Every structure is written in structure tokens, then in C-alpha cells.
Length: 404
Figure 1 (cartoon, one colour):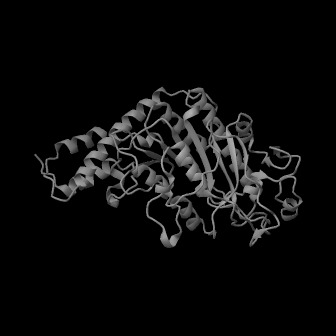
Figure 2: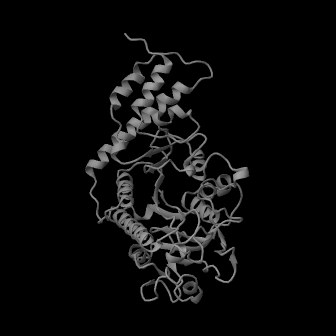
Figure 3: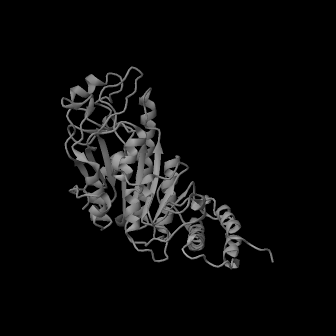
């Protein structure tokens, strides 16, 4: 019998489960080796991150405002092209998916969302959104990670799943709980799973007092193996009941729909759409991004509705900041401040919430926010996930009235 040392086991375990990334306080070299338990539940939150700073003015177009057209002689969306929401606002013409969701009472538009003393750095601002704290006092864990930490583990499925090739969002980092990060559904199926299980079961090394590292690997790897088998079974049986567009975002959301329909207890799903940093030649790029966003989200929610899950899924779209009011010399827009957020699904109070920020009262050329994003988080946490938002956000914020 070959002697197996603790160091050898840990290295082999990490290699065997290398397709997984785990958020939490485990040592870095184990993060790809494990997944931990988190309690499941009926309600699901799907976060869609619009990375780069989405131009809210060309997303929800104030077509009845002359200042909009004065500031954007080349980039402004023509009045006749917008998909009208009311007599003042309309969707970008490529956001037909959002228009359909609004028409079916499944889209809430929150205007003028941001935070005090805004930071125009992508990384710093995104970290504020992820942690709910400023740099000088920021905690290491994220707001969704803190939510997961407050839920008792019961040996069920992982509490959160991030789908994408980008680094796992800081919002999911936790002190105790763990979230999986995978690039695709195929990568969720652990290869050599039985060999890895055999290594765990064969290991007879005694536990060192005060050292729970081995126990962490044993428990979390076992959870990963169970989840992998369930996902593999789900993928083979799922039949979409909506036509998903051909895009990476649509593929991610179709995967999320597959896992939800499979009955996984995962409560949080996180995906991202990158490319919104439109400093130059914005018109075409932004139109393409909005087309992908609207089409993917509509198909996803239609699919869930057809499978009977429409009432238990809430989607939230956000970006780290908006863009400046005036277009730049490169036919693009630079980093701004306030922008819209979106909540979508059967549970929302559909329509426009809040007034459009003023064009005459600007912050260094940017739209001022009037709704702190943590009010939206408080709404999601308290009304949807049913937890005390103060414990997670760090202080009391009045929830917005967006979820029915």
C-alpha cells in the first residue's frame, strides 16, 4: 500500500476538483478543490452584472427632454426610434426583450440609482456595490456572502453559483459559506470524481488537534461530487420552452434555468455581461449589448414561466456606474455616476420607479443619484430572501417598494 501524506492528499484533491472555485475563508490552494453546503429554499435570486458602466441614458431614453439631444448630437436615440414606456421615457430600440417584459408586468425600472461620493474607477466602484462599504472601511466579504453566512448549512446544495470565465464576484465572498464558480455546465461535471472519492475514503491520517483543514476538504469535496451528479442528470433531461438567442449570456441563463428546474437548492445565481465601457464608437457596441441583455433575460423568464417557476425567481440587473451626460469627441461616453437598475420577474411591481435625474443639476457633468443602491439590496433581502438587511448591509436602509 502506498503511503499517503497529508500534503500529497491535499494536492491531489485540489487537482481532482480543479474545475471548481470556492469563495470563503479556506486557504487559497484549496479553493478549487471544494464546495460547501448551504441551505436551499424556494426563492431564487439571479444577479446579472453589467460590467463596464452601462449608459443608462441610452438604455432608458428621456426622449422628451431637449437637453438630452443637446448633449448627445451623435449618440442620442431618435425620438421616432425609441420603444415608448410613457410620454417621457422609452427603451433603446434594441431592448425589445425588456419592452416585452414590461408589457407582461415583469419588469421594474429603478431610476437614478447610485451612492454618495461616487467613485468613477471600475474596480473601486464595483467593490462598493459588491461589499456595500467604502474602501477605507470595506469588509473582505460581500453582501451575498454575508447572506449565505447567515443561513444554516444542512448538507444540501451549494448556496450560490457563479457562471462565467471571469473571476468570481466579490459579492459572493463569505467568511464561512462557499460559492461555486464554473465556466459552463459541462465544467460543473467533475471528472475523475470517483477516483477523488476513493482517495478521500482511503485516507486514514489522524486529525491534528486544532487543524480542521483535512475535514474541510473531505466535507466540501463530497458536496461537490453530489452536486456534480445532480447537474449531470439535470442537463440530460431539460428541454427549454423558450427560444434563447445565440449569445454567451443567453447560454448562461439557460444553464441557470436548467439547474433551477432540476430542483437544486441553490438560492443565488450570478452571471455577468461585459463590454459596457463604451468610451468610443458607442452606438453599435451598446446596441448589441442591449439586444443580448434583453433577449436573454426575456427568454430566461419565459422559459421559467413555462416550467412553472415564474413566481419563485427574481432577476436583478446592475452596473457599477452610469455614463456622463455629454458624449465625448470619440462618439462615446465617459464614466459617470447614476444609472438605472432593473428587477425582473413575476414578483415585481412593474413600471418606472423614481424620477429621472435632472439635466440641470449635475455632479461634475454627471447625473446625480437619488436612490442609494443599498435600498434596492434591502428590498431584495427583506422582501424576497426574508432576512434582516441591517445584519448584511451594515446599517438600516429603507427598502424600495418594487417587490410585490
